[in-house]
Length: 92
Image (cartoon, rainbow, N blue to C red; front, side):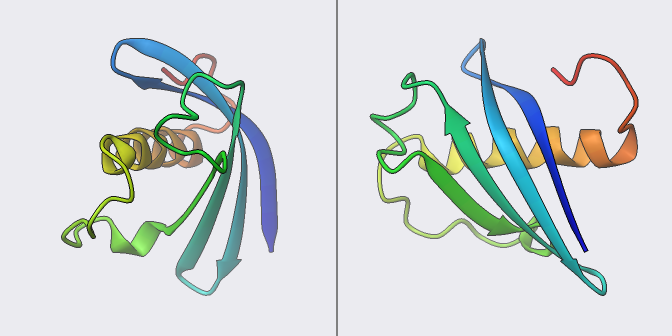
């Protein structure tokens, strides 16, 4: 099963947006986030991050660029908030 939605997240006190796709297989959730706009291209040049929600407690891998793991964490937190309160208003 898949879900697609637009999500706002905060990184370094600025609000950014992404189109998020979540693919679920059992208890595993695979997240792909396509960043909207160009504000984070210096951190995520390709504009897309992918990660598993079940890896939340893992040690971060070596980041391809400074700030990458922090952007991933900001999106992860916003996705979790969204999944807990999908009809809620602001997701910041």
